[in-house]
Length: 184
Image (cartoon, rainbow, N blue to C red):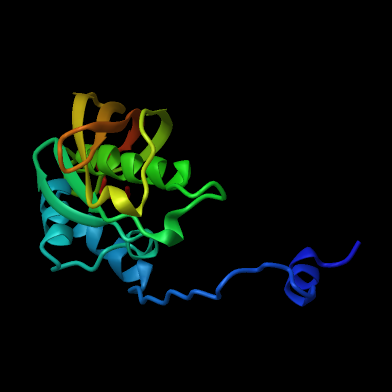
């Protein structure tokens, strides 16, 4: 069997589409990651929201914007675009999940001391309503439900401009704190 991408691209009348394109730039993720341990979680997230630290590549790739942060909370906005679509003409569930995970995880990050970081352990998403380019901008708010020494639980809600709930998620995060010797 041949390369399916090449076969589809060279097939006559393949219905491949109108050839829309999107281009964007991102900053070196190593530079962004190097900034994180130099400040506490809230200060780092504020620096991201205010543009003093460039956004990680995933935000530019998916078109998310970190709108605001507060202790235990983070808010992202997204304007749905065609490049977010699945094959049935609506925003792909993975985009919802990435947005919900970002809001929940960044809410946890705001609670961390300098040098600590988190990793998502799980993400439970409930999809409630379809999202399309006609939906307009949506807001995803995350907040910490419980912050322990080793784990945290956060919740995120995705709403439209009218406040209609589109999706919700809970996320458990593993907290890794710097060692007392400062070695991480």
